[in-house]
Length: 288
Ligand SMILES: C[S@@+](CC[C@H](N)C(=O)[O-])C[C@H]1O[C@@H](n2cnc3c(N)ncnc32)[C@H](O)[C@@H]1O
Image (cartoon, rainbow, N blue to C red; front, side, top):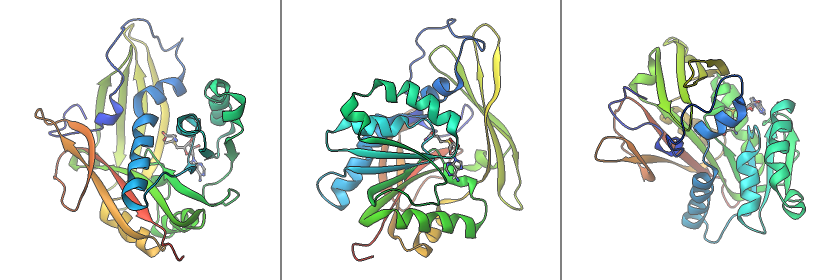
């Protein structure tokens, strides 16, 4: 967040402020800008492998990317190691078609054979039991009730092998509970995270992503998210309710200038800052 007293999303600011003036709203693709703004599969893959190394030893191979969208992370997963397989689950055919054309086309035939796009609901099965289920970029906030979110966590539990890991992220901080805009200048465009509404009575939050360009044009409401802003204790409690064990929060470190440093460590005490993101990891018991 531009006005945040503390870190926000350093892992999402990898794109440099390189060239300016070459993108416009008319010539830009919203999925491409989304990926440049909020996805960093190499960091996510490194984190998944670290979690597995620390909790299980060795390396995970089978990844189910819930809310996979374009399947960007899944495609990077199959490229990352020869034995890896991935399933990207999403409801949106158009988004998956974009991902197949962009990311699938860049895989070799052998890699493509290890990547599967699944059109469907994350609460459904249909994939073999996996080592890791990842639900990133806060996508599970779409489930607004406790019963609805526990139902999703139970589905993720079923889709894991015994001993498998569920990896989620979450955001928060006092600025998240207010109507505000956060802007970040990226590679030839400005990413705007716009919280239009927050309802303190039921926790509903309405967010938009806009993209602005150096020529003054704008792609407004490129993406809209009608979510419940869940908190970390609520999420951990619901993970336990769904059968998971040892839910843990990985909190981002801070640079000298108060920004997030991209390094996530297991913590039980965080800072009450304006904006933060964190990972949450929970385990399916070995004997489940
Ligand atoms: C915030 S985007 C996440 C995209 C990408 N995976 C990422 O990490 O940035 C949320 C995605 O979830 C999908 N989605 C929403 N509800 C879903 C559901 N119940 N089952 C499967 N996909 C769903 C949407 O179509 C959208 O592509």
